[in-house]
Image 1 (cartoon, rainbow, N blue to C red):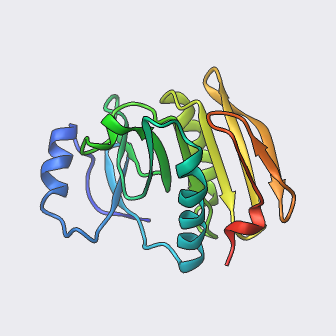
Image 2 (cartoon, helix red, strand yellow):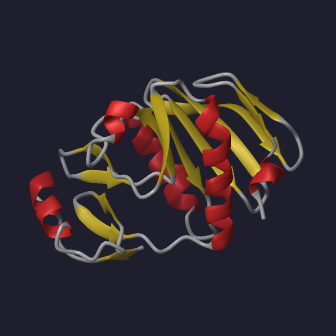
Length: 184
């Protein structure tokens, strides 16, 4: 990610700025500063597509699965923080909004060689502080899926699977998957 400018003082300032950007540019906002997200790789997109196909029928009927880009405004103060999870499960009514303003039912990040610190450390900490209860980290390189549940202001690892081992998840929805099914 590349830093682009000085911090925004409000969400409205950011929205006015981003509305002038080309549609193919995607940003997160870290401590008020817009940070451009690079395009994902093919193997990242394959894992994302497989997850959408697995999660869509497993989720609650009044929820939908949305792949990135879909902004989540974590908080506005002390500095604006907007993240773009690789995948979220949200109520249908929230999917109609231009961006999330409260925690989704589930957020998933798919690791790439350059995203470990951002996804497994920074976003995990931020998402817990923003009230997310269920967080998954998918590592297609292993392949591995780690399932986290929020406990207070942090996440606790509650399940994980590697390669062909079956992962059985019961919340926030019930499903079974093998990490090896998420890789090309």
